[in-house]
Amino acid sequence: MYGVSKVFNELLGQYYHDKYGVDFRAIRYPGVISSEKYAFNGTTDYSTEIFFHALESNYYKCWLQKDQALPMIYVDDCIDATMQYLRADKAVLKRTCYNLCGVSFTPEEFVKEVKRLIPDLKVDYEPCERRSAIASGWPRSLNDVNARNDWGWKYDISTY
Image (cartoon, rainbow, N blue to C red):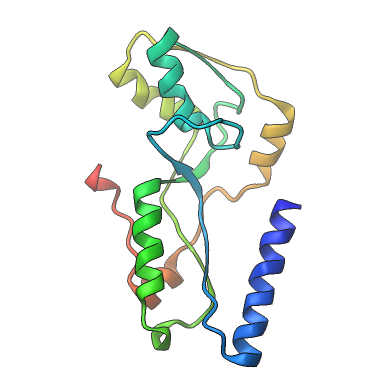
């Protein structure tokens, strides 16, 4: 239902844009990484949750397969991109819905980087069938060329 309702709203917004000139704008985000501790339950939340477990117990049980790459973006970049998009002159926008892209990585690649900061971390991979199935349906990366071309979006991982 989640994906169906997103597409329905995008199409509805496109309809109102085309028929009545409504300035409808939508963004498709990849998985969002944050430094805040929330109630974790999303497919990509391992990328934030792992730090809290590593600091509390030096152990993390990952619910995805170690080689399941998913696209991710930092929350501050989502906010910046959203503000850029909302401020963009509608004359330069060629569509109503845009993808954002950050960086794609696997849990195993991510754990390797986390271990540079917390070397004693132990990680077991015990994929959850439901979450792995959801992750398998995600694209390996998102194409954000339209956002780059139309309103100047740019993700620069080198700033981190």
